[in-house]
Image (cartoon, rainbow, N blue to C red; front, side):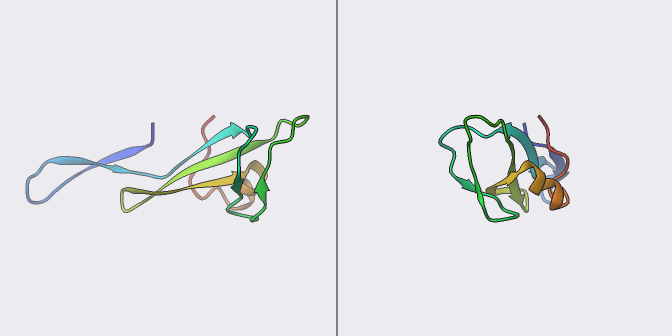
Length: 87
């Protein structure tokens, strides 16, 4: 589950969840068609090689905005923009 924080609204004093961006590491599966957000190249499945990708759910102002895919080395080269990936 994505990381959240709670904040209190001024008018009602009720707490609401504020979602934060996160990253996970997964094997690249056959049929996946995504471009790396860092280098722009396709994140490709190769049958004889077990490459991994980093998938990021990106939240802007507490609302889900997009999913970004990275090659695992590209995510590290980008400075881990959404924190350390979870396995």
